[in-house]
Image (tube, rainbow, N blue to C red; front, side, top):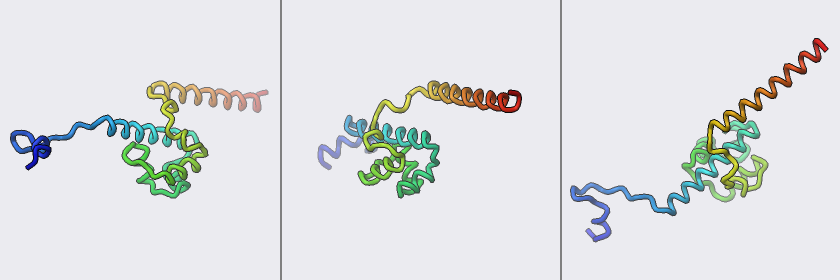
Length: 130
């Protein structure tokens, strides 16, 4: 056993887990941003995973893995996803698109829904009582 191999084992002969290096962490961060942005744009377009996967020519499972940050697609798949989402490829990697605070997202959605309901009710009253 070489010195390098010995470093991977503890005194009891159990293999040690390697700590992730900074390159791995950066790669995972990139995967996470990509996945969140694809999910964000898909939601904005009101597409299901099945719809987007079909438009991009990939499987639902692969899309799900991309959105969860488990897989990183090839360049041609990135182009297909961007085209299906009607965005530029670089937008899939922007770190500032998706608010990190879920309460902020829920608050925005709640406000949007409340405004739309208010407008709809107002229109109904105007139409029938106006």
